Image 1 (cartoon, rainbow over the protein chains, first blue to last red):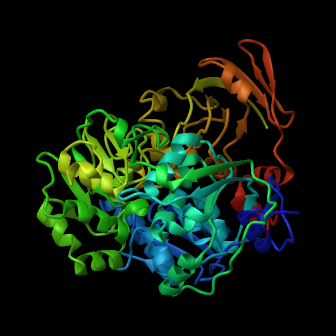
Image 2 (cartoon, rainbow over the protein chains, first blue to last red):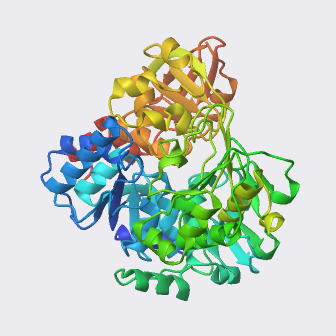
Image 3 (cartoon, chains in turn purple, orange):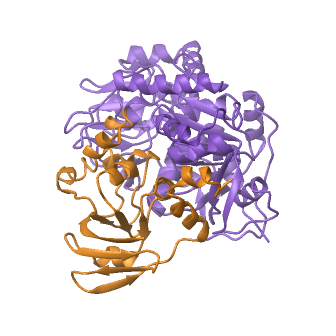
Length: 420
Length: 164
């Protein structure tokens, strides 16, 4: 029977020759991930299982990124709980302040995820690793606990929507604009329970950074996972990250898809999602004046080196608009260092932006840039729900690093071309 | 599993950020989480919810963050059952894993109004709006999911050997 890319990976991990959409399976996992918010709940559940060791101490990763560096005493307690657990279980991949970064930027960078893997993470944006041709999906803390104990997870095999990419993105248009465009088209539950499989000639023109950003937001369309065909760029990225030997799966030519969309990348314009859903998209060309108080450039969606390079390219020699607070957050220590070496941090600071140590911080209204009542932010993050970045009456507009940087200069949402 | 309770109703795309805002995720204390449940959507929820109440909602309930704190807060607040037109998938599996009863039923979620008294028998596959007398059939859970629910959640299912 013909299978999609996701179905092939799941079948292989369930020890089955084939699987079909809707089938419930128990699959082996290659990595179980948690952070400082979700791991404490998982650890409490894990203790109930009465196990003295995890299934494989090298296949569990815990990253202190959400409320770290500790934002308050309670957050400090949660990180301590994770630290103690990882120490007791001798977990190899525990990332604390100093080595940590935003988890979904960190794990691929460290070579911890490769093509063909099955990854579960107690964080909804675990779907990011689909960019590398892995099946990866967000789960809850109980799944994380049971995954750590057994090395397995239950899944309902998803059907898939196919996105055939053609053409090439224009200048200052990025993967963020493509995925916002797609979510605007299919809606926040347009891919509910399904895989989003990306393929086509246009895929090869996208950088790995763009792909990571797009797979990251598959969850914002309700998808179980987003997954990209593996090409030379993927393999080169994994090699450079020092990952284990990847296993490349391709969808059968006659695999069945619920729907197929053709996306011509050359027609995509910089796109912004208005409050309070990622599906409320408009291109920058159709936006009336929206004045802003804050800009955030960072997160698991857009905190990678390429994102900072684009933002710096726009901010170079310019000033952040008076009255706007611009916050730049490199996603990992490595990215931070590279941004320093390349002079990007100097550009940001001279423009009047602040640069923060890696953290998820403001994306989820944790710390490092909370909004007051009535304030508006343009953010390169992934969610603009009510209260997401602070006060329930604040607003978040989702955009690319290019649009965010341009908006910081203009003091209102605008196209990158407008400030050049 | 049988339930009878009063309905509290919300709309589509109720996300886990409004179910339990991230500013309260620095604790895993269930009672504390429950005290802030639904705060950013409906500040009156925590004060008016009663044990046994039934939450009814529209499409894509529980979308967004994977925080298990969301179904935990709902369960701890006293909600006995969530009926929605559809659930976001992580919320759906989290609810099953922690033993919060949920059921997808478009017709019921559409018709049942705030304040109605509802009776649900998930084994028999029926939701009854006692206020209007209308019945709505529901799909039974697949046996595998049922075995997790019957065990009282995923951790209990593993402890008792239902899942190895």
